[in-house]
Length: 84
Image 1 (cartoon, rainbow, N blue to C red):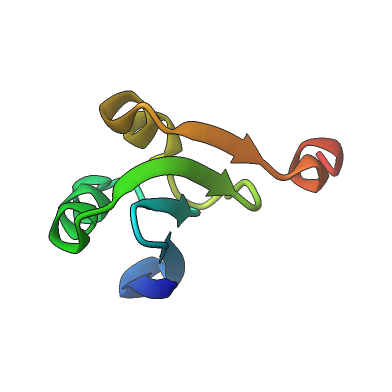
Image 2 (image 1 turned 180 degrees about the horizontal axis):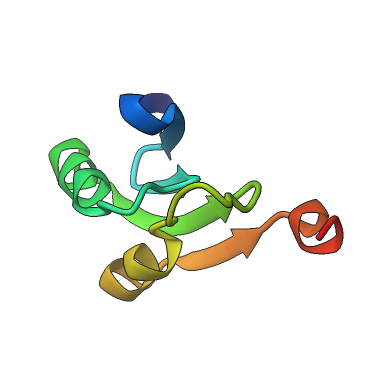
């Protein structure tokens, strides 16, 4: 298993790619989703899951674009939906 960290400095945003042998999940994707697609290709894994751990008011998440480009399923933390 491999965990790759992505960091966007100006907005202090972290996201992650968690990969096994054939598949991977992207956690809290940034708006520019091509970085994950490129990394997954380099690692020879398929993006199958997108985990949105919490919703952000200060930036646009890339979860919808990444799902459209990869066919991955989106999973959203229930706490983020209930806490308003």
